Image (cartoon, rainbow, N blue to C red):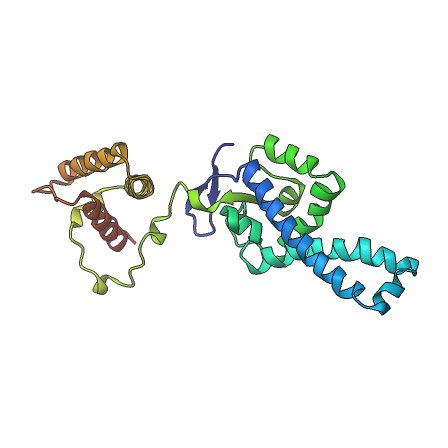
Length: 249
């Protein structure tokens, strides 16, 4: 699947990698194990006494115990965890994925409610086949619940593009003295390139990314007329980012 480009309400574009079908299936499996364990405890608590066992002879109680309670637990589990855990269930958190809205706004309880409702259709009634088909075939990896709620599930660990405002928090110009004022001649896209290069190097410390950091530093020093070339290329790029945020915001 192609990366998802999302425009936030602050007019900042952030690019996310959609969660793979495998990650979502493993997350669902983890959640299912937790649900089965929880339901087993509820069942044991009810049937561990003579009163509960006697209720098994009542037809409507059988439906409640073996149909409606499991459905309620399934629905409530996904709705409550995603609502209070910022778009994550325990399975999603374990797999490093979460739910976000396509318009960049924070998902609301109504969005999670829709997702939980359609979960019954996407996974339970179709044995998960419908959800798997939609996730693997749609451009954004959306099941019916995602489409209805205008949400998508993304990988938290692989956000590709970052907003400059989120890189470093600097309260005011008085709190920080820029080192390279000529950085103002660079564009925001240039600085996003710097940030992405740093992020890749810090995530994958190999020779190729180290060489990219060195080359980027050399080019920026030449363009900005910075002499002598700083010895610590990574720290130099971080300083440029700080300076740019303070001088241009």
